[in-house]
Every structure is written in structure tokens, then in C-alpha cells.
Image 1 (tube, one colour):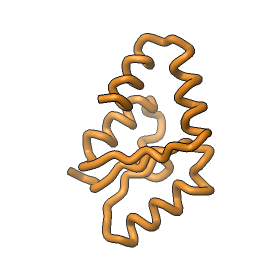
Image 2: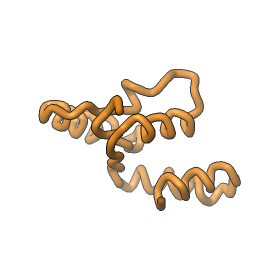
Image 3: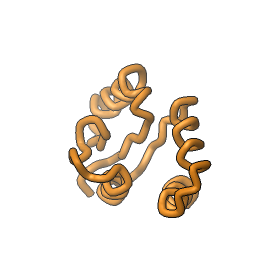
Image 4: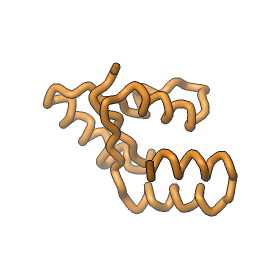
Length: 92
């Protein structure tokens, strides 16, 4: 495994909470996969998230109103591949 934890949060929470939590984890000696820093530019978000999960021992989702609003907007669009991905990512 490349990382101890994949920290998943809304990009709207990056400045306010995401980076603060990432810095706290890294100060504690954890190797953190964080989207703003570690995702590959140009790759699909689903591919980046899948790789982050695969390469990390644990995944942590920072659940905020921004995260839930984004999740709901993706779910209610009814894109079959996206719905399957969200279901597998969050509920399995």
C-alpha cells in the first residue's frame, strides 16, 4: 500500500477543513492520499478515486453538507455507471 489513508472530501471543503485534517494526519505520521495533491491531472475522477482506494489501507470521507449535496446531485442524475460507482464506493 502506498498510503495509510485516502481522505475524501468535497472540493468546496478543501480550504476550510480538508487540508487541516490532512495536515493533522500527516503530523501524526500517516501517509495521506489527498485529491488536491495526489490525483493524476486529466484522469477521470472515478479512476482517481478508485486508484486512491486501492492504494490506501483505509478510506475516510469527510461528510459535510457540500459532500452530501454533490453526492445527491450525482445520484439523482441517474447515470447508470455513476450510480453503480457511488453505490459501490459508499455502501460496500
